Image (cartoon, rainbow, N blue to C red; front, side):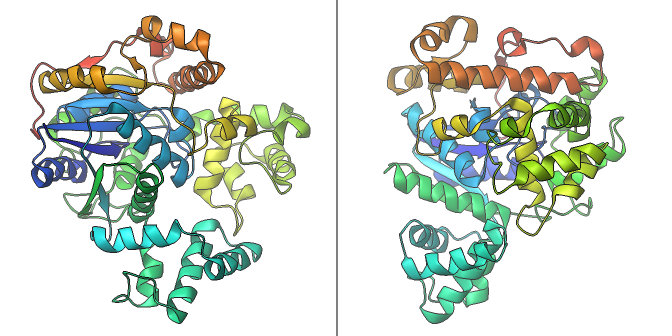
Length: 432
């Protein structure tokens, strides 16, 4: 039995994702394909345009056999937190042989060499990184510049064939960045899971135009934002993914955008004392004062982000911070759910007939509690562990807040993490 794992958000699932799923199965000759899926909020600090159950169905009908949820305490974090939580979930299943991820670079040997270097304590490199951070650069830019400086003076082992600027570019592309974090997480956990990478095809991650058949998720989301009444996206998405998206739009459960949360976020910022703001994860260096000042004049999320953004604070980092504030995700929570800690459970979202077979092996080998029916399976673990109770509390809160942004008011009931059934398809996905 051979199992390949993928980590994804599918926000929404497009042709590039379908290609990745098919290649992951082909390259590994996997019997099963298991997916760790980010939930209703994403690593960019935004709500997913369509809920996690719809995106689970998209995954299952395009090649995945089983989908587990990445808890929100990892899903809405920096790259290290996102990758660390996801890799540990793959490891906890007890069945995964390969982790297959997409990257702009496409060469696993060089990415692994860079990941190994970044995972070491190298004083000259750390000193350069600290210097750029002290100058006010955001961490991604500071790390890239520090790598360029270091590689010019002393070639990084395994990257001797790359120019310094090429090494710096490796760590500026979003899929490369996540890939490097996956590799470091695998090394830190001493996992036996083998990493493979597939070159990203088509449009770049941040490309905003629908220019070719493999468009970016960013461009698709922008098209949805500009035309919320089911824009013509069939060319850019697998047929069933496009159909599922359309069904959610017609049902009034999509699309969802961060704009919808402006009243809640700005209200909370205006009424929360500075002392409480300081307790939110990601708030530091006097940022609580900037948040207060910005909220006094802002009427939209865009206004708020424009007032907060500086050279040090990127838009993505600020969006994550706003979501942390919305969820009441505190400094203590960030410490309790650090990348070094273990997730509390494996929450199943859905499976295919093939996936049902794999589930039998996972039940025997998993090192974390397997949750298929939260009302039944989680109760004993919540009673026994405050950490488990808090992880699940934040998950349910995130969903309860997410559904408030549904276009149809009748779909906004709380408690959907308990009432939504598993997504079970009756046929194998098209990517199988």
